[in-house]
Length: 248
Image: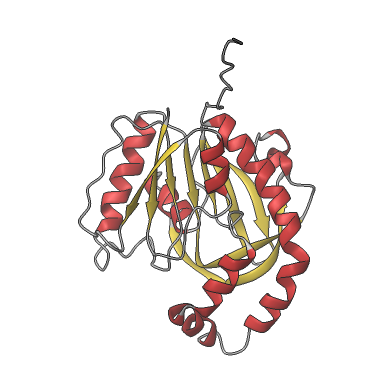
């Protein structure tokens, strides 16, 4: 059985819809939750891939969150081992930083449903080729990143030029959230820190509008995440095989 290490920063940012797909494919998943264990020092020894999830902190805030420095070293270790890596939101910012790119505040926060468009290079990408042109996807971020050198720029939005990239053949940074389901979105909107963040933009983002738009967009997001994450699981290089027992 192949093992996957998942880095978690806060309780409500989880694997979401990716979790059952990975389990169905036969992966054994181990979480490292830095909100509970900030002094954890995980190793990738014996693991076959790495997933780094999102969080509200800046990738540059290593003084306030020393575990971010630990994560940068962990990502670097994954790169040296040529392991498949998926980095979501904060994770994407951390992989960009590991690869020497800048991470900085975006001109506007993207919180809610936004158009994301694949680049020309995405047409030949195993994951982003699943996009049917511009798609409505869920976002929750205030920072952005430059595309690292030697990485392939895969997606953009009107408010944020750099939404996705691939480094090498098997390392992905996604600024957006394909992994959310409807209960996760409602939960995120109820978290006090998230409510404060929305209040801080002084009416530019309406949580009621986000809730109202979600039923109309969530099914397509699920379809898209199934297809994109299905390709991701192939990239991780393991599909569970059915074992047929001999007939008696």
